Image (cartoon, rainbow, N blue to C red; front, side, top):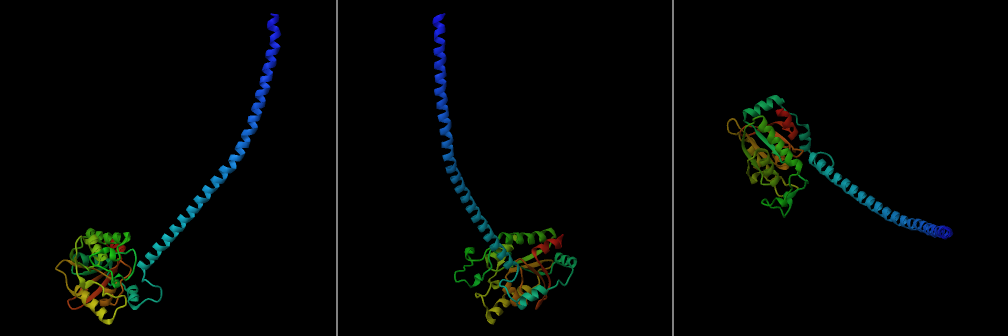
Length: 282
């Protein structure tokens, strides 16, 4: 018993000493870790800051690109809806703006359903408006060398066709120019077409009187010739060509004019946008 009792103080003292040593080690470890954390945090903060700045820069670039794209689309939309370059309107543009339908919507629809008209349709909206007819590289067999229909242009063509189908408006001959945007509009709207070079532009951006006459001579027979009984003929073409024969610049792209053919002459009685066709048939 005495032997045992005389060892307890040693054990207790050893335990105490061990506790002290462990305590010092713990304190030493506790002081070191905060130092490590302190040095790591600034590095992490700098790295995180760099990532944030990079993200912000990328976001700014994306916003700038989106803004530029929006501006480009707005410019294209404005060009397609208006008359191209800014400034005073031409006489043909003024006549288009001033044109008033000569019959009511009800009379127009009944007349079209009975047949006997020619409907001129300017091709649907394109991605860009430029005088491709004057390009030395243009190829009527290669759509990549020409202005192409935009997504809106495809929609416009289908909308016109849907209106004809819904109201059972009879369609006779469908003729387009050789340009892809014209025959594609015809195909999307009516599912059929034939191409005629007589409806093409003269190959210039600024026309001579002879070239204007050439275009007028090409389209006029289509506007004056009466369709087969109970049918309406469709002509899908271009602004300058239509203006050469009528004095009216048809705008915007996708616009239609309803024509009464009279053999040796013709009369324009209505103007409709693709949206107007939808409204007309209800």
